[in-house]
Amino acid sequence: MSEFDKILSELYSRTVHSFYKLDGITDNFLEDELNGSDPTGDKIVVLTEEQYLQRLRNMEQVLNLLGNPQNDFKVVHIAGTNGKTSTTMLTASLIKSFGLRCGTFTSPHLKSVCERIEIDGEPIAEIDFIDVYHQIMTAINEFEEQLDFDDSPLSFFEVLTIMMFQYFSNQMVHFAVIETGLGGRYDATNLVKPEVEIITPIAYDHMAILGNNLEEIAMHKAGIIKPGTQVVIADNDKPEITALLTSEAEEIGAKPIVENRNIFVQESEMAVGGQAVTFETTRGVYQEIPLSLFGEHQAHNALVSLAAVEELFSETDVIDEGVVRDAFLGVKVPGRFEQLKKDNLDDITVIVDVAHNPQGAEVLAKTISSRDDFDFTIGVIAMSEDKDVDTYIANIQDSFDYVIATQYNMDRSMSADDLEEVLLDYFETDRVQVVDSVSLALERAKQLGSDYKTKFKDKNPVVIVTGSVYTVGEIY
Image (tube, rainbow, N blue to C red):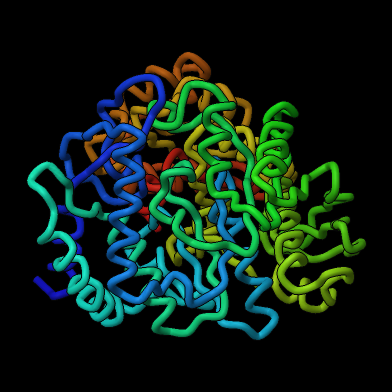
């Protein structure tokens, strides 16, 4: 086993803990659900609010021993249900276009844990991962030796967050765009002093942790807002949630910049390789900016990113349009309606999308419907069993001509047979098939696409792999 793999084993063996919930206990949730780590199979321990605040204080003690590396760079902090990673990458691309070194922290990863910690689009190298781990473990070991028997050591995500802070400090980044693991108020990343916060759209997800209504969920996300900062609030399906977030920001003493009140997507049109978007911000209008991401939702993610970066670099004027064009044209967000490279065996388009909750399914459906070049769509779907699978499938049922139920290689995946039962509530029997692994399901889908193309030579069949980050990760 390599030293890198040994370190990963040590990280994944760390204590699992739950997120604070106001009105009950949590079970059947693994650590990867809570904070984006790989599952360990340990039981979840439910924490009180005070216990969770103590975990943040524990992290603060370790960071003090390290000289508080989280204060060595400026931060944009991002919370929300959907769109966090896309917004993180868009924001970082804009900052980088100013000639500044910019780190990003996202979760979960598709293939390697190193993807979570990047600088200027480059993941941390394994050798640097090893070095930073050893650097911070001196302080963590010193701290954990003093813990009482009843106290838990730092978790996987807490250690990884400290590693991120230390690595960005070592590399002397100017900015870091940091995505919360889950929630916000009690998240391990909520020890930064941000210049600007962004709250992306709020939807139902992780209800067993964050609450059973959107108001509770929104208040967890709003916990990242700090006094004296600017917070950009994306539009929400329910105006009362936007109003709640706006009111909370004002009460805290932050300046809210609210989509469809202060900033707007004026127009978005499909273009080669993405779309052309006209943005209106508090500074002015940006006309027909090329964006290398598909989907109406990405235009809105780009809007809040642009508004946040304006707050960083300009008090009154728009950002130079050349900077914005370069940033948005060059941005890449892995696994977000991303077309994979075609291989030599076929000419079938394969798109991957990590949509994993009902709102994500709605967005995926809209994106598919906007593509008039898709003649026959084949869905390869595997989902986590703790998700609202029924509503997810209901939201995408009109998007696929044929679907293959499968499962990814983790215990928390819904079985392919169980997923088939849900699919049959929305699709005719002759439009549904079951394949036991994601890789084999993809091969079957490509064969179906090839058969279709043989029959209809001028048509374009498309395979779309979706349902979970873990589904996409298995074939990425």
